[in-house]
Length: 335
Image 1 (spheres, rainbow, N blue to C red):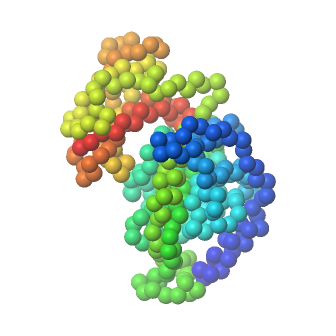
Image 2: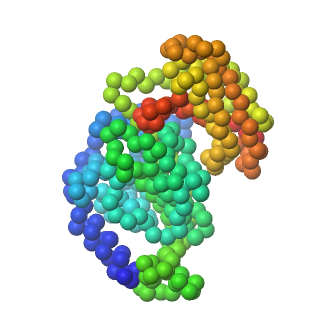
Image 3: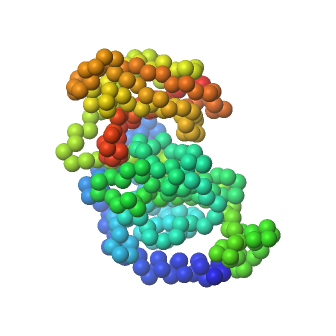
C-alpha cells in the first residue's frame, strides 16, 4: 500500500469515527505560578486522574470508536477538532489520556522504546519502559511519546496509556526508499520497506507547557487520604540544590507506611531524567509497622554525568504497583 493511500485511510477512519460526545469538564482555578500564570485543576473520578493546566489550554472528555474514552488537554488554538488521538497535525500540542488504548497503528517515523532512549519526563508514577515509546524527528529531538504503565490504575485497561505530542515548527516529511535513496512522498511505501523521516523543530514553549502538565499529573483513589509529601518523608541532609558526590549517603525519617518490608527505593537521575543508579533506604531498627515517623538510612553509588544538574528520587514502597498509590519525593541536586 502506498503512503498516500495509507494516510488517506487513517484520516478517513478518524474523520468518520470520531464521536461528537465531547464534554468540557468543570475545573477550578488554582493559585498563580511565580511567573504570574494562572492554572486550573482537572480531576476525573472515573479514571482516577488529576493534573494542572494553564489558561491557554482546554480539557475535553470524549470517546473514540467502540466507545473508548479519551481525555484531551490541548492548546486552545490547536488546528483540527477534538478528540485528538495520535494521527494529528504536527502543529498541535496536546496530551491524550487513553484509559482503553487507541486501537490503531502507532505513528510513523523514527521511534525507540523508553528503555533504549531514556525517560525524558519527571514522572510521578512507574512506567513500562519496554512498551512505552518515543517518536523522533530526524535531528533526534522527540516530538511525541506514548507512555504505558508498569501496572495500570484500577479503572484503566492493560492497553491504556498516555500520548504526548509537542508542536513542531517548519514540519516536513520525507521518504527514504529501501535502497536508501530519497523518493517522492507519493511513492513512499512504508509497508514495503521504505522509511518516513520527519523534519522540523519542536516549539520550546509548547514543550514546557506540556511537560508542566505531565509533571503535575498524579492518580487518585477513593477514600485515600493523600497527605502532603512533607508530612510523609523528611531528609536529614540538606542536599536540595547542593553539589553531591558518590557514594551519596541518605538519612532522614519517614512514616512507617512509606516502606514495604522496612525498605523503599531511591533513584538518582541526571538533568535529562536518565537514571544514574538505583538503591534503597531501610528503616533503622525493626519498628516500621506504624504510621509514625521512623528513622532510615541508605546510600547510592553513581558515576558523575555530563549534566550539571539532576534529581534524587525517593519513592514509597508501593508493593501493589498501582500508580494511584505511588508517592515520590523529587529533590534537585548538582554534580
